[in-house]
Structures are given as C-alpha cells and as structure tokens.
Image 1 (tube, each protein chain N blue to C red):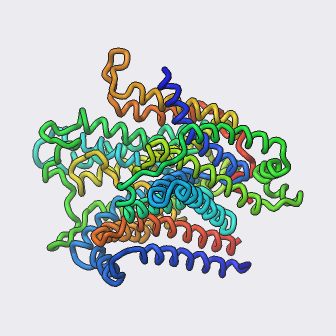
Image 2: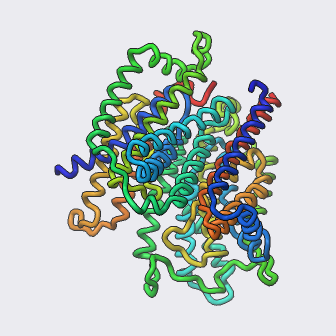
Image 3: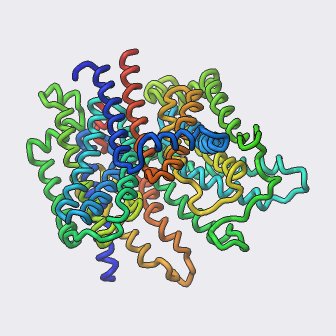
Length: 280
Length: 339
C-alpha cells in the first residue's frame, strides 16, 4: 500500500509539471501539444550534459532546451501564424529528432555515467508548490489576470491596451520551464539515466488532464493524481494474477491510456476552454 | 523585420542554417556524406527500390491523414490504425482457406479486413470528437499506445508463429504477396505504390466533384457555415475520421502483402507521424500527396543510408519538422495574400 502511494506521487509529479506548463500556454490562448517534445528533449539534455558537466549544467541545459522549443512554438504560432496543432507536431518532431541526434552523438558519455540530480522529494514538493503558487497568482495578480484576459479574447484584450503576442511569449517561457522540470524529473526518477522515448506519451496525458480539469490548476492536479493512480496500479499488478486470472502484462501497460480515453469520452465537452485558443 | 516576405526568407534561412550546423558536428567529411546520401536514395536501382518502398506507406497513410485534415481533423491515430490493420490483415491472409488460384480474392479480403479494423480503431476518436467534443489529437494518441500494447500482446501470444522464436506471425506464402507493378533487375515497383497514386487521384476527384466531398471540405473550412447550410457536422466528422482510419488500416494490409509478408512487434517505424507531415505538406490538394510522399520517402531512406556514416537518423526527423513549419508559414502567407 505504501509503495502504491509513493508510486502514485512519483507518476503524478511529471504529469503535474506538464499539466501546469500546458495551463500557462493554453490560458494565454496557445494550444500546446508540444509538451511531449519539450519534456523529452529536456530529459535527454539533462542526462547527457549532466553526465558530462555535472548536475547544475545538466538541469540548466534541460531547461534551456525546453524553453528554446517553447520559443520556437511561440515564434511559429505568433509571428508566422502557423496553425497551433501543426506547429506543435513540428516541434515534437524536431525535439524527437534532436534527442535521437544528441543521444547517438554522445552515446559514450550517456553510457559511462549517470547524472546526480536532487532527490525526488525536492521535485515533488516543487510540483505541488507550483500548483498553489500559479493558482493564486492567476486569480489575484495583475499579470495573471492579463494572461487569462488574453487567452479568453485576444481582440478585446488588445482593445484594453494589452499586447497578446508579448504576453503569450512570456507565458510560453513559463511553459518551457515547467515542461523542462517534468522531463528532468523523469531522469531523476530513473537514477539519472536517459532512455529512448522515456516520456512515453506523458505530455499528451497531461494535456488530457488539463482539459478534463477544465483548464483549472487544482482540478487538473486532481486528474493528474487519478491518472497516476492507474499507472501505479498497473505497476502493482504487472506480472501477477488478478482475481485468479492471468492478465497479460500488455493489459496493464495499456490501462492508463484506456482510462484517459474513457475519461475523455465521459467529459462534458469543451465548454470551459479559454475562448481565445488558437485565435489572434 | 516588418516585411512579411523578408520574415519568411529569414525563417527559411534559419532552418537551412540549423540543418547545416547539425551536419558540422558529424565526423566524416561532408562531401562524402552527401555522396552517400545521394547514392543511398537515388544512385542505384536498389536505392530507387528502397526509396519507392518507403514512399508507398507514406503516400497511403498521407492520403488517410489528408481526408481527415480536409474535414478539419488531425488524425494522429493513423499510426495505430496502420498497425491494427496490418495485424488483422495478416491474420486473415494466413488463415483464410481457399483453393490455389483464389489468392487475389483472398488478398483483397485481407486488405478489406485491415480497412475494417482501422475504421473500428478510429471509431472511438470519431465519436468522442463528434458527440463529446473531446479533442481528437489526445484520443488518437491514446489509441496509438493501446494499439501498440494490443498488437504486442497478439504477436507474443495468439498470433505468434509457433515455430518461430521472436514475437512475429508466420510468413505469408509467395502466392499471397502483392505482385510488382514493374520489375526489371534490381528495380522493383510495388503495385501498392500504384494503389497510393490511384487513391490520391480518386480523392481529388471525389472532393472536387461530389456533394459529400464538398460538404466535407466545407466542414473543415468553416463548421459554423457548414451547419448553417444544413450540413450535419457530427455526421461528416464521424465519416471523415472513420474513412481515414479505414485507409490507414488498409495501408497496413498493403504493407504486409506488398513488403513485409508478416506482422511483428515494432511493425511501424513511425510511418504514421511522418504521414501527418505528408498530408500537411500537400495542404489543400490531394494530388500534391504524391510528390510530398516521395519527398518524405526520399528523406526516410536517406536517413537510413546516413546511419552508415555514423549520422544519427534523428537528423532527418529534425528536417521533416522544419519542412512542416516552413510549409505551414508559407501557406499562411499565401492565404493572407488571397484575402
């Protein structure tokens, strides 16, 4: 039971970081399916640069990579007005390619040693704190309210004297930092090593959690924990008979994805979506 | 910075510089790498055979993504529909009894079975989008992961070749393989490629000249206007997504019958994601799927031949991502000029 609880917290942490990253982006009106790529490249660089130059450099490189990808998404969608989903897919492709490139060019470093990252508890506390801070900040501070205003209706926000593009760039820096932390957590959670495609769709699951949480931070946090509990369940039961039946391991692998899909099917539409998603 | 054309040129330049910088980190001399790239993709008949082989699934799946995209839907699930279709198709091709000489009919049935499996796999995402307003990108990505887990289970257990050691089905007999459309020496062109080209042309005509095709385009371009004009947006969404899944599943069947001859774990090296790029590059015209599919096939094959030189395959994935971005930026520029 204890291992179930710690596993749940452990699975929830990267989802919370990613969901918050998505929150900042989508609340400012930028659809962001590129969370997955940002996490992946951050994880890759944190592990490899960290192994070569130490943990501080590794964390810095991971965060810089995620913010860099986030800026690419911002430039594509805001300056060049590329469709947000198209840009997100392109950023994911670039991130996956870059992670593969960096890993293969530095395979010796990656295999030789692991990066010594801070203990998992530090990240977990940081994730929970971020939720509280961001929820309070958006609800109470001038900058937070501007973020929501731009996301709800960029045209009216412009009439009120705000500059949507600038605010979105700023929001996407935050998105990059948070998604980067999610990726770095994955490396810390696997003893400082990077493995190919280690995000395994978490960026998308986090986005589903954000949507199911109605684009609200605390509700999304709860959904993250529900998803994480199912992932922890699948670890718990992997390879063991369930109610006397021999359940194949693949069933448990698929379980978190099935739960996400069913949750999407049961959700009541996108009524709470920021009104300015994908608009200018 | 203010002039849009200048800005666009800057983007293209930045993309080229980024790729060039990546190549400078490669140890081998660049002319040698470039020569290897050209030789590996179009230098010899064998290289052409390989490039066209990569083009075939990309073109077919690109067509699948395209039809959904014209209805305004991002079918990222084509990857899952492809592998589910391939697995189902292999099972039918292996187990459908029939006297010798009926192979063409059985192959056709196997392809249809793949199409049905792909359509069924797209159905949840179609329904969630049409009636629950849940985003198809997330639901289809979840379905991809489920498809991988399901087929992994099937080829390790029920569908596994009892005589083999690896998680793979048995191999199809030679008679149950799609014939080459053209074969001379080392240059072989599968009839699967012709099916892809025919599909792209048929799609062009259907979208252009049929009422249903018009309704589909209208829904994609402006759902509100479509609804006002009496089009059932939910019905079009369901039909487009399911058709897209059917094409993806049938493409899986074609890939088995034309090239692989069996189904195994890790069947798709990510054709589905590249196919999204093919469809985005083709933009509004399905005839453009043919050159776009070829470009992606060329880059995929080139990436494989670069690996011989110690250049990671990821470099072509980065290039594909940049191509998608640049193409989308150019398209926006053109559309805003028209307006």
